[in-house]
Amino acid sequence: MSVQSTIRRKTAPDIRARKNGEPIVMLTSYHAHTAALVDRHCDVILVGDSLGNVMHGFETTVPVTLDMMILQGHAVMRGSQHALVVVDMPFGCYEASREQAFHSAVRILKETHCGAVKLEGGERMAETVAFLAGRGIPVMGHIGLTPQSINTLGSFRAQGREEGSWEPIENDARAISQAGAFSVVIEAVAEPLARKITETIAIPTIGIGASAACDGQVLVLEDMLGLSARTPKFVHRYGNLGPMIEAAIEGYAADVRSRAFPAPEHVYGMKAKG
Ligand code: KIV
View 1 (cartoon, rainbow, N blue to C red):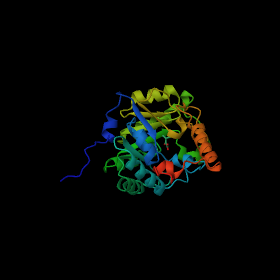
View 2: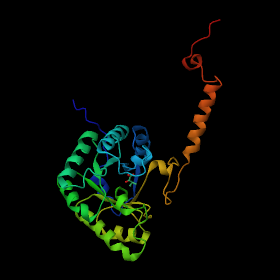
View 3: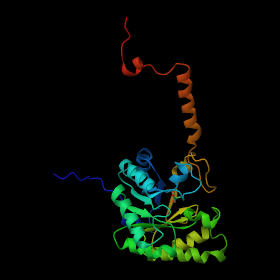
View 4: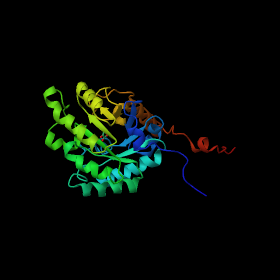
């Protein structure tokens, strides 16, 4: 008897086919419990290397390791059923050569069972994207602001603010699309440039701080829920869970201190002796 699941997850080709169609909804998740919530409403769950900032309190994503991504990627796969899960390739595990990228991506796919990987970089990564895509590894690109390059960029500034600086970003988008990526994240670029790229390239663009002109949107879940210590200016907050969580913790601490903590009799339905 077959034990295969009857639930069909979205695939990279499903997302690729959404070009100029219904907008793609994507959020990050790093855990099984948030993945289960995100899965009900999103087409794609990104296990972003932003987990370095959000979960671990690092200043940048540079210290994030492949093992960290695999651990959280596996958790997100266990928590979700429908969305395509994309796992970020962290800094240092793919830039040295296309072979290095292949071995890292294979580990991610085999050890998490996710459906695709994401890597940062445009023209300079095109050969690697083609190498992976040609060997059965769906790749999502990431251009514009690429946070893993913070040490050469110097700051997390928006890209392509003046028309004179658009060309390299347009070239990056074209190169990643032509290399066979199934979609590309465009981070922190001005609206006219995001629109131009979206209208020009063959694959869906997924914006973060890049306007509604893209084929889809992604946000870091904790940013849009008001749970991050620092939130980029472009993020719209859909909730403010920080104070709610703190109020619950405060209530618990007060109950414990005043011995008003729910009694076991109440919880387990034990009758008092009498
Ligand atoms: O790591 C991440 O969460 C990302 C998104 C910001 C796109 O790459």
